[in-house]
Picture (cartoon, rainbow, N blue to C red):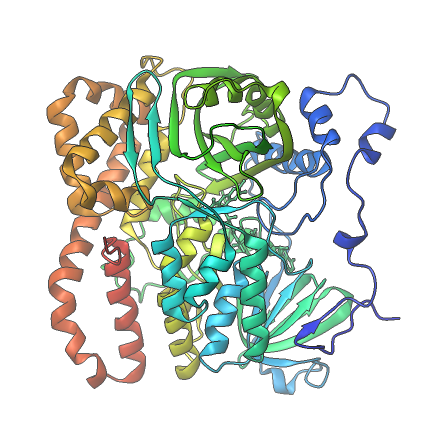
Length: 616
Ligand SMILES: Cc1cc2nc3c(=O)[nH]c(=O)nc-3n(C[C@H](O)[C@H](O)[C@H](O)COP(=O)(O)OP(=O)(O)OC[C@H]3O[C@@H](n4cnc5c(N)ncnc54)[C@H](O)[C@@H]3O)c2cc1C
């Protein structure tokens, strides 16, 4: 019997047999059977928690076994050897027409767009379906949201309503928890309180179920339990090869397979479209050094490591922490880490609370493993919660699930398209801020822009990599944010005071608060703008000039110089969007269609790259 039942039933093509995810039993089995030394506290805790309902997306696995797998992947990234070997070739370019190929009659289905990966993929798929395109999603597991909530604000979710992916009442249906006010806390320095920032706990299970139903009702097709094995790009079509030798045909493939997408691995090595000298450097300020870095397929420039829990037993549980920074750097394994915290009431019960501990590190041998961070988490979490809530002890908490994730960040993001007919989306595109792990929040900001741009590209057949790259353009505000990650990572030999990072953050937040909502709120929602950033830097220099030498020591001159370039570009994009856009826009409809498509993307790049899409 064939593994897949490819004929969609009620819009969903289910596995006939053998979804590896469904078959797996989680729990103690694997690790208890293995002869081993004393189990770590993390292992004991994790194996005592029953984990059901694990899914494929980031943060969707809760077992100890999955933690070990992720730690192994993380160790490979950190290994001393630079990642210069050829990755597995997933995408191949075939310089001929599909119609004349041997495969011409073998495709099991033909679509306008195929979306690979269904977690955030379902959102773009539904937006494109609503515009009248024939869309299918290929998801290697069951297309289902994770149990662990996404924290976000209503304002951000309303963007999905504007795009037509959600109805306003869907937001209420998917909202599991709502809380205010929210704290930005700095140990031994002080607190800043804000309202309506990350103050909703959205159930991904419910949200994705709602969008999935909408997608199917619009005629969308889902292939679940199907893994992408390869992509052949012909002159007139893209062929998606699934495991088990099935193939699907489409005009465009959207890679929404997350941070560890097999296509992204290949793209990071072969960015040829940006080398095309036809590009105007005004719009593509790509330096030779940057190109070299991309070409070498080097390691991520930074990594955000996150561990945490959703636990029951918090008596006082009405407020959240958007960020809480510790006053000292901690020794972990062979290196040092500066810890930050986030904590939110969870929707599963009035005493349930999600707590995240995260840190930014450079991937190198000796960088802390997730399990090592968890070992510290068990000691530090009650201490941290006690700074906010009284009398929290690990013994009195029932751990509902243990959460973890790693987020690679690259200075050169978002990722331009490297192949005709293939475009990255969601975490795979690197469009999320390097300082937060809010990839879902970032999607809400860009979905309208991306769905309209993709629709236009499909209509005009502008599916070459150069054209698709315009949809994931250089954004100076994203690149400028990268410095913040560097400033927030503990360094081994920098000679800065122990509490420097905490001090720096407090000074910044304090200045932003003094400058008011137009400065503080966009920043807290991952949007960096030129005016607010300049004002904040100016005020920091006036109020705390003695911190400047430590900043130089902490981030280093090369990083500061690189950042200055993006800061200037941020100013330039702000100028272009404010003054050049109104001049250019009236002429767009008079231009040839392809030129008009390109100019529209440039105008969007100016606007989004300057953070001017953000409305207070
Ligand atoms: C601990 C943690 C907490 C987080 N909290 C928040 C939060 O509060 N707010 C927020 O906005 N964001 C949060 N995020 C980030 C958010 O979860 C991610 O941004 C989001 O999941 C990214 O979705 P994605 O679809 O781009 O990638 P992924 O979530 O990685 O999903 C990729 C999908 O592709 C599928 N896939 C992979 N390979 C293949 C293949 N070969 N064939 C077919 N399918 C494939 C996978 O099964 C999966 O469904 C958090 C993440 C973590 C880890």
